Amino acid sequence: MKIKLTHKSLNWQQLALASGLFIVIILIYLFKLGSLTTKVSPGELKVSSLPLGWHGLYKNPLYLPLNFLRSIDFYLFNNHHSIFLLRLPNVIFGLLSILSLSAIAYLWHGKKTAYFTTIMFASSAWVLHVSRLASYDVIYLWAMVSAVLGYVLLQEYDNKLVWYYNLVILGLLTTIPGLIWLSLVMLFWQRKQLKATAIELNLGQRLLSVVLLILWLPLIIYRSSINHSLKQWLGLPQNFPDVLKQLKDFVAVPLHLLIRGPEIATLWLGKAPLLDVFSLALLLLGAYIYFKHRRNIRTKLLSSLLVLCVILIGLNGSVSFSLILPLAYILIAMGLNYFSFSWKKVFPINPIAKGLGLGLIVLAILISATYNLKAYFIAWPHNPNTYSAFDKTL
Image (cartoon, rainbow, N blue to C red; front, top):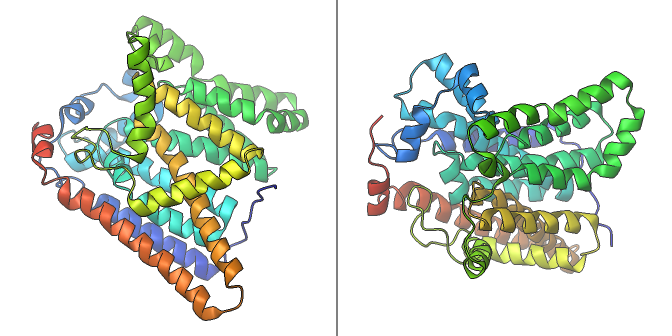
């Protein structure tokens, strides 16, 4: 069975609803950005003193997209002592991640599922954490969802802008430690579309395409060799553990996602699970549907990305756990879509039953969102471990 794209054009009412939803998300992500923790973590203090600007980016071009935005932020406001401004670039990349995941859900599953998935992803405690902390975790969230969106757009639209957008994203992935492998995997799955489009380009456009794809590689390799950070760039640990320890680290990745979160006080609340019960149930349902259609190209793509995430995160090198989270919500989107489809199939005409099904989904999503928002905005900042982790002054 082929899984088809189901998107339709949006009318002005739907655009207004989508815009209103995103404005609410922006306000939530800016709420108490500089005051939720009165001080900063050691990692944030280090970020505040990074050498940015052209000189800093040349000296250390790793994490280029985020550091470039930080350079603009610090240059425009000329204030390294504001917690709000320090964390603002992460918020922007978090919001871009939400927009990209919304687009994927919309193109693959339609408007209703896109709205539901957006609310669940935006209210996810982990997404809030990495999007409102001046660290590099959010860049991995953005990288995965942007790479998948580039693939989806390339499959759907025969457009030069989509072509160049995809190449820019794949090129920028090479500046993020460990994600040269993600860029290569995406190139593999897009090889047919890339070849077909390349045939239609003239010589100048082909040269531009190659430049966009490999633009940063010479500088990255050169500076990484000078800075002795080649292992970091490749996503490898400085020293490999023994085989048994390494296997445990690989197993820990799905355990952290499905059962209990990593004990990192700056990013998480104790051992609480990353996903609430409703999200976890939808994820398992979505995984089951994809497994049923395991010969579908989309399933093969997502499976390869999940394996890649487990390897890169399990190596305990430079790759953040955030890399895998967008894939979890892509599975959740499939679970939501299948649940809605199945309910309509059982009650195709009865408006009361259809309304009841929609109401149950909305209620569950509101409970899920409320749980995650309270966990982040109330429980986490009042945890003693959080106070201990944020003890530095700018």
